[in-house]
Length: 472
Image (cartoon, rainbow, N blue to C red; front, side):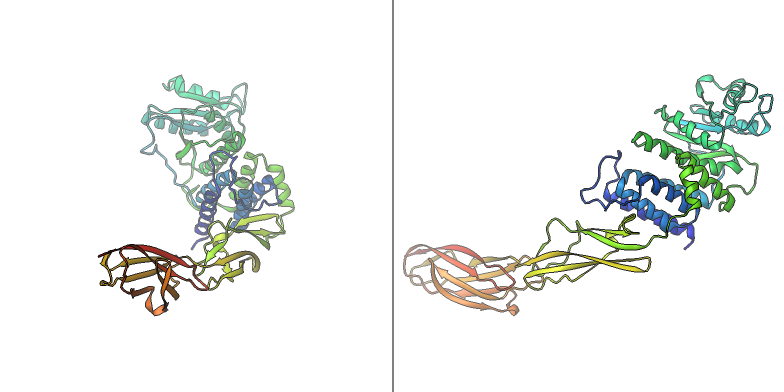
């Protein structure tokens, strides 16, 4: 399994965990049995997610996201999705040198990124070739919109303004063009362009346009900018990045694993998008300590009472691993082991919970009570109407239990009109079945027959009453 596959799998696992604890569309709701809150701040954990992504340390990156989930499952869900998309882009990005097929017929916008203008404020070759790609895309999708992005001024002109004029001169309707005229870098291209798109709810998907050598970094930063806007507004934003169109300035750029130097630049840019650059630089200068498991915390189920013979049910149990004395936390219920549970007899017991990580194993415990299983009597009569002092009734009884593995044994008492007739011993070999032929009844009228199972050390007693009619 490759490193990229492992990291993608790890992020998928984190996302599943987030869904299980309440990945809400707004950040307010928290699960009733939420994980222990880490002492690390949400800001520090987000910085660590970027730092460890840059260091290719998926274990501590995922721990940072899991710790963030204890503070805000909603934010952690956004970050888990973003980091998964970043991993995929790191592996390589499919580059479209022509407008791709299948883009939406409505609600779609092409975002074209500008490049520096000439000293005179005129369009450069690099920008014009991106615009030619844009023109082809707009022709293929005539219902789409285009956002031109770039604000670096030269001689009183902005990239966005020059690109706008170029497209209008080529016949693109002004109503189809949006402008973002303040950005001076790919970072601000991403943050400012996504801010513009967030003001247009009718736009539900976008496609980036740039050079092939630039498109991967831009894709990652635009994905980050989407998360940053959602964090700021506290609302989910469903706009989707669908594809790209690029001028092929390189036959290899963005098509294979990201080079180390480029990865370093992207990580720094991502930190900038989230407004975390100074914290990120400080972390590079003083890296965080290695995460080590120091304890675990267990939230037991609300009720821990079992009948004899029942199996342990961990539903409702939340096991949280604490690293570095609680600086980081992770919900690890599915990876924990449970020992000491034995429902063979009535009484109190202690369940030991253990979890191992970073070469260390830690334990905690919770108590349970084992009580008797319940039983029930199902009795039938060979006849309901008999003749006085002649007919004898046979009573058949089936003793069943609430736990299938607990086989009933013990005394079964038969009574007639409150008077004990016979007590029969039920063995485990009988499999709960027993019968008795009653004596003749010498008095007419309705009579009550009771079958009472007296129970044992594992089973609660039970009974059933039946009536029989005696005629002359």
